[in-house]
Image (tube, rainbow, N blue to C red; front, top):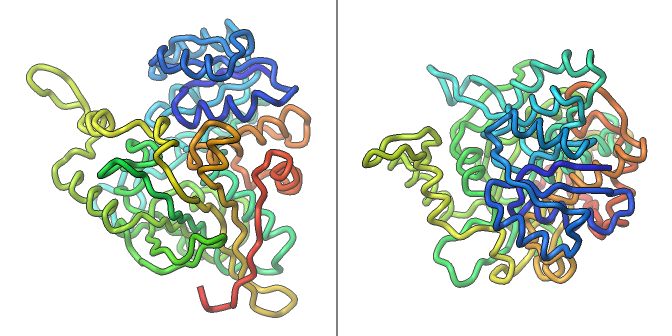
Length: 406
């Protein structure tokens, strides 16, 4: 398989590092606006032939198409902030290759009632073009990171193997990771984090479909496995809620994330000051987006691995009925930062996000996952993915929970 990797930040590097050992990978083009960064990653990988470096502007669709044709790639992997999704998605369609991303096209709040009604939903742009992709016989794999991605595969696995009826599919994400030496340092793209945390969270309910609530609503305490322990989690906008009900049968779908009081306070302050604005404003004659300035002021998550300590857990809590009895399980994956740094030279959060994309490529390359159109992880049989997780040294766990205790 030949891959055009658009974006060589933390997750892009992890994708290349995890895929490097796989014999099915013929080529990954390390393309980025920051060529210096791409060259650093190439040097770490130690294989300039299989990992050539190219300059690319993710906002320039013609450049993306030209790069894909130059290397005759089979798949375009989108590993940049989702503001560029439309251009990359459309470029893959025009070139006629498989597309994959880890976050779908952006939403925009309802203009009159943002905390009750949906405006433009995550992925609406992509799903609106699903018929065109089907008619052309092309596959767009959307939401193939860890969340969304692996968590959605877990939801499909629960439906296929663990439950007769599902009442709620709830993605639950928490960690005990510390970043030492910084007063404030996000472990993932701050651009994306601001987007998903300050937008109105989406909830899905049978009969009501998708609706919104206020950011950071419905706090609850969730006990995460493998020593992480109890973490307060809150509603956050995320793709799983937009994906799971399209293919899975449940009565309710939610996403909750453990952010912590300090992180929530910082995000609220950014919002009050208008520093979460992703649109450009004029500052002393220069056009700049305030959110880009915030990102530039903070440490790059790709370089924080040596300062991070602890574990991160991503997973799917499922509540329903099995054999006439109530059942609750949590299907999860825990990534330890020390292990990820030793094994991949990548910090835990980006490594955990990247491995699902690589497994997805593996399954596509070997014909175990097939399809056309715009498809989420739930559209594919989960068993091959679950079996690959141990092979990729990212094993999953299943925790039985006391019904009603979560």
